[in-house]
Each structure stands twice: as structure tokens, then as C-alpha cells.
Image 1 (cartoon, rainbow over the protein chains, first blue to last red):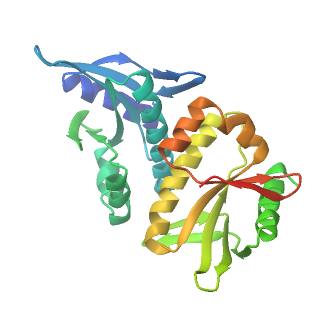
Image 2 (cartoon, helix red, strand yellow; image 1 turned 60 degrees about the vertical axis):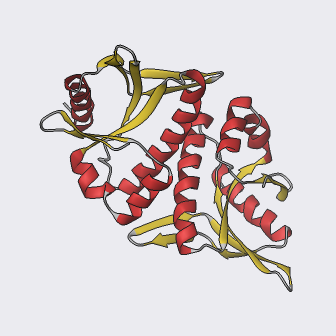
Length: 138
Length: 138
């Protein structure tokens, strides 16, 4: 199993352990002539009176030698996906999933923090070893 | 000469015809440990009392079979580059340069217009045949 697939599976397992049901793998975002493919969709019942929480998750492995280039890709993908998601599935919120290891090694660097804050990027941080959710950042 | 190089050279010539001096090719955006490489920097004297207008231009050929994927790349690049440019060279404004042909064939599509508007992307549109500036969008 490739490292990429390992992260994909760990994110799925972590979501299930966190009470989510995986409803699509992959999930297609369609708006007019545009079709984009996000990694996962998941639903969770919050409370009887509040209904179901729905998310779309794009998994970013950050395994390339240039994490700043991957950040650029993740940023463009997040912006484009959320624009069309808001139009096609406004009830779903988009998250970027990364490993706790990448979060600690890359995302806490000052020059990266300022990008994440400026664009209010929401992350789902997963501990790949235990396959558990470490943190939802917003 | 590849099509990509052709666009690069046409954009440079169009800027010179428009009164600009090319000051860097490529132009490095550096902030702390991050170094990003944009295609061009150019300066133009506006008026004696107002000084010099300074821009950075990232040229997007949109020659790949998936223009929506190129839009995603351009969007991520624009956001990341402008974030660090604002910190390292706040006097410079960033533009995305595209051919008039791509502008007319792709950027006027409704699902693309809404992305350009949402993120207020500024374009320099160049007529590749005449090597002249067709339009500055904002």
C-alpha cells in the first residue's frame, strides 16, 4: 500500500471512529460544465433537533519534496472546490485533511501559519499511526 | 519556439509597447524561508508627481487539456504569491497574464466568471498575434 493510500485509509478510519458515516469516496462536485472530484464525503448526526452535519474532505498527503508547492495546490483546490460546493451542495463544509506529522513539521511554520489564517483554511488533522482525529482546526 | 515561450515573449513585448520596462525575468518573491518564482517584474513611470507603478506578472498559458485544473493552479498561485509579495514587496501589484484567445474561449464562461469575480483576480490580457495589451481587467 502506498503512503498516499495509507493516509487516505487512515483518514477514513479516523472519521468513522469520530462518529462519521462515509457517504462518498470519491465525492463529485458538479456545477454547470464543471466537475471536480474531492476525496470523501461524510455525514454525522449531531443531535435529534439539529440534524445531520455534512462535510467534504480533500486529503493532502504533502509527501512531495516541495511542501510550499503543495500548499499552493491545496489553496487553489480549496478555493475552487468551496466556490462550486457552495453553489451545488451548500449544506456541506469542505475540510483539508493532513497527517499530524505534516501539521507539526510544516503547518506550524510562521510563513505557513499566516497563509492558513489569511484564507481561513479549515483542517482535519489525523494521527496516521492510531488512525484517530487529532484536531479539527475550525 | 514552444507555444509557452511564444506567450511569454508576446507578454514581454506587449508590456514594453505599453510603456513598461521589464526589470526582472524571472522575479523572485522571498519571504523568510519561502522563495517563489514569478515570471516577470515591470515598472512604468506614471507621472512625475505620482512616481513609478510596479507590477509582477505571472503568465498562464492555459494550454493543458484541463483549463479548470489550470484555473485551480492559477488561483492557488495568485493567492500564495500575493500573500508573500504583500510582505516582501508591498509596492508591487500581481497580475495574471493570459492570451486574448484563452480569455474569450474560457474566462467568459459563467462558471469561470464567478471565480474570477469572487477572488478579484486581476488579469493582463494580451493579443498574442499583435503582441499588444488587449486589456487590464482591474
